[in-house]
Image (cartoon, rainbow, N blue to C red; front, top):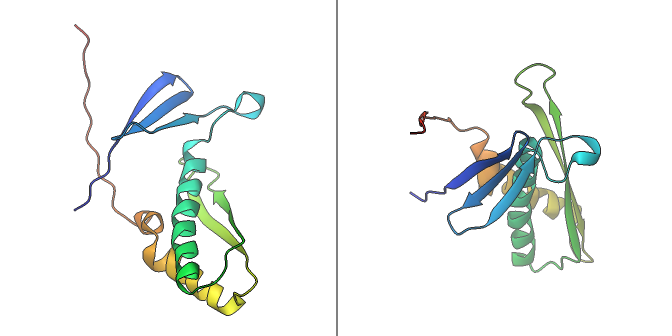
Length: 138
């Protein structure tokens, strides 16, 4: 089993830093408007889903020997009005710029990428467990 681990630390009440095992950092904030400098956790979830789907999609198109001149995914999540404010639906719009790809093969590749190969999409269906610990300063 392949285990991934991050450590998230509070910087201020609305700012956090996440560090993975190799020291790569992601800044997170919960500010709005002009104060916002980083993605929120829910935006990062969309970014993770889009990033995972993108890698698989592009690699499969290249395996089909199709030229990928440009590629993007626009991700939009519709959130619940109450608490928790989870995503009720997520819409991914895949845009491929290619002189030799067909719409039909691209649709097939995207479906495989999202439904079969994207670990993030599969993780959204997973069970989540957790533990807690309170540390008392001496």
